[in-house]
Each structure stands twice: as C-alpha cells, then as structure tokens.
Length: 394
Image (tube, rainbow, N blue to C red; front, top):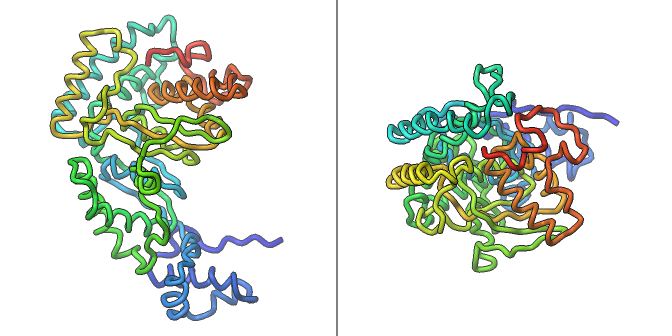
C-alpha cells in the first residue's frame, strides 16, 4: 500500500492549475500511467474543455478543496452556504461573542435585553443553586453572561455581517455561484429575497472571475436547498409529511438563529417552508422560556422584535422549517442537542422531535434524555447537570 498527499489547499490558485489537476484526476480513470507520469503530461485543452466539461464528468473538479475566509458576509448568505453539503465551516459565534456591525436600533435593543436578561437569569437560576453559571471562563465571561447575549442576539438582523472560514470543492462552488445567479434573476419579489439576491450578486462579482469555470454549471435538477425549491418542483409543495421510522420527516417552527444552529448537522436536510415574508406565521417570534410567563416582558420582547421587523428580518423571526433524515442521523443530533450545553431553542425543538419519534417508533423511547443519563461520557461539564439539562429555563 502506498499513500501520498497530492495537493493541499492553496497550492492550486489559477484556472489553468484547476483544469490541469482535473485532467490528471480524469486520466487516472482511463490511463495505465502512474500519477507522477500523468503530472508530466501537458495540459490538453481539447480533453478538458471539449470532452470532460461538456460530457458532465465534473466529479474530477471535486478533488480541489478551496478554503476561504469570508468577512462582512451577511448571516443570511452564510446560511445559504451552510445548507449545502460537501463543506466544512467555522463561523463567528453569536452565542459566545458580542455582536458588532449592528444597525443602531438593533444595537440599542441588543444592549437593552442584555441588561434585562442578566438579572433575570439570576432570578431563576441563582448562583447558590447553579454555581457553574457564574464561573468565569478564559474570556472573563460567565456562562450567565453568555446566555444573556445568546438571547439578546434574537433582536439583530439575519443580514448582520459575520465572518467564517469555509471549505468547499471547486465543483460545489460553481454550483452555488450558478444558483446564486439564478436566484438573483428569478427570485420571488419579496423584500427578503431581494436583499439576499443583492448579496448573492455581490458575492458572484468577487468570486466568479477567479473561480468560475465555464461549463461547470449545475448538470441536474438541484437547487439551493435552503428554500425547498427542488421539492416544490417535484411535488408541488415545500410541505413534508410527518413520518417517523427508519427515515423521518417533520416540520416545526424555528427562528433564523435556531435554523443556523440546526444546519451544523450536515447529514440532515433542512429547508424553509414559510416565514421569510414576515407575515405568514401565526406566532411570529421565538420567545425565550425565561420570559414566557412574565406578561410584561413578553409583550415588550414582541414589541421590540416588531420594531426591527418594520425594516429588517430579526434573527428571532420564526420560520416553518422542514427536517428530513435517517434514524441514525437523528440519533447523532439528539445526543448533541438534548444537552445542557446546547442552545436552548434547538434543545427544545430537538426534544419535541424526539418525543414524536418515541411515540411513533418505540425503540427510540430512551433517547429523550441527556447522554449523561444514558451512560455516555460527556467531555464538558455543563452548568445544569443531567437533571435540569432539558428542563432549564434558558
């Protein structure tokens, strides 16, 4: 057995290098030559541009992984990227870092709710009962402070600029740029889609001149998965049936922020059914459990989110989200999200799905509990412990 590292990210930077490497990979399939001999062959434009690309043999372009640093990229555009498969991503966390580059009204409301939520947390989870909430981390912040900012960020726009490191292959990047172009010209005339289309067009203006390979467009009936267009074209609807077995599908309300968390489970499919118009959800905003029973604060929370909604799309806006996957992939999600470490909203939604699964598929009954209560090791030490991990208020 011989194992060799061929190319790493950054070694291929030009169209010519991309195409030559794709040629070498294609030649492996049809030649008796060893890799070193293939590398010595001259670039054959007739083979690549007139045979490989037109024939749809595009998988050879998947060997080129590109790692980007995206800065000042709107969160909504990041979510469009993160809903596609074949990627790795490391994004600035709005749970653990202070939000910046926020519109003045949103900044005012973010700071306001930081000030409200921190003392409210102390009311429902005192330092005496939950000491780990008040221990400072390496960044000097307590878990209680981070929970306050995690909830305050619901006031900020889903178009708030963020930054991330993102790795995907060249073929996938071309598919995404192709779909961005289609979205820009054919998107529904809603304010959300118009804003997103402008961001997509700006991205393409920077990326396509360097990374766009003519002819490497989408060869199938795939579409950007975030919006469920492919399912709608096949069935006439984005709505999915409620089903729990060896495979499953379900729908439930989730905020923009909650969906961004759910996207981290890349083996599971998610798409938005309704909600981006801002008017088609019965219950328009996610409300932290911490304030649901305080009618005054509840009213104030909804009123403040409504102010943001007049001109923007707050991360607290609820969407109807469809989720589809395999039994074992949901099991993996449940182990990670039915946990005191998980963001409250995704813990709550995962718990709801797990309970439905248990009712329909009895072999999953034991899953509706934290992994620490299922005899599994937990590398962290959460503030709640297994007893309160699923019953906490925040």
